[in-house]
Image (cartoon, rainbow, N blue to C red; front, side, top):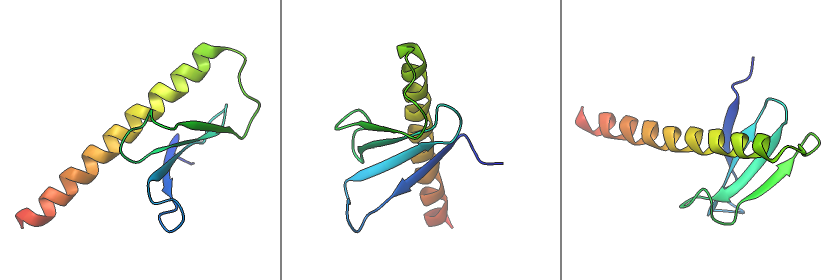
Length: 84
């Protein structure tokens, strides 16, 4: 079973861009700036784009929460690594 969100990058071609992949319906890939989730954001729909704007807002809110939690988790792991 896939997680609801996956984090991807293509640092060789797009070093300032991250991709957050939503694996549940409506499936999409959120392209965003590394420094600011809401900056230069593009949604690439893998399924039909929902007509209900609230569904889109919910997916984006969850994606942003996932992204921020992942960054925090990576920082914690980095800090633990240097404490040893």
